[in-house]
Image 1: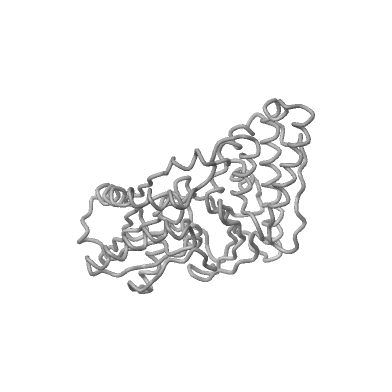
Image 2: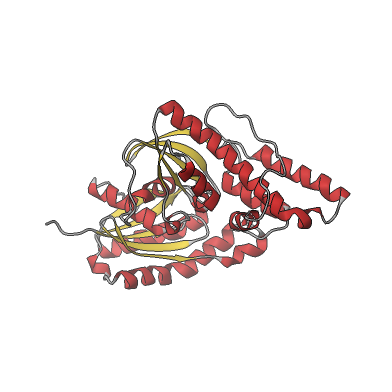
Length: 335
């Protein structure tokens, strides 16, 4: 029997510092340090994020190694997110990974953040992994894409947002409504007791499988301004119905394109990934489609985490697909 492969993975693309240790495709530890500092600003402040990563990365890596109960000398490779993301945040993880790989004289593996969200489905956690090919809806604060996944590293982007991402639409709507950041979980909670049919907002008519949330967000702003002008207490008195209607509208936009992509490609294996895939109504709606074989990641693998970086690195390790210390982080990267 071959020796297991141990990989330390680091994720620092935005405002979460995360480190994970994987034994082949099994997660031994997955530690995440959140940054609460951004809540008072209603969004991620890049400079504050990179400073917090510098403060968090050593203790988070130490926690991951301790929980996995392995020593640095047992590691076979160091993996890290090379992009896309916030440049300052990426540089912290990239620099740390390079230094550690150099000191241990082991391979360095660079990982594409959005590939990792999709490949999180292949972590061995007891849930089934999709067979190829499958369609994946990746939805997060910075990205919204429909991807045809042909193999572990063969992706075809069928459609993507031409402006704002779905997660950004949730966050900016929350800001319009005077709700705290991040907006998605808050809107979901308030929507539980609201009427999703009460309000109608402008839905974009974009060709193909692409998305647009900019006009949708603007229609909410104008609708609220009009109502508040007539009744200053309108938002507070109708907040549950507003949130339920906003949430349903965003899901309608996502599923209209997803259903079209699945029908046109003839692929009935459908997965979701990314931070917004933690949304319960989104998950429930996906499960409700009995024509599809659906795949939903565990909650801890939806938001930014190092376990998804580790599983991607494991499959790159099997191909001996390594990088060297000349590698640079990139804020923007095509899938």
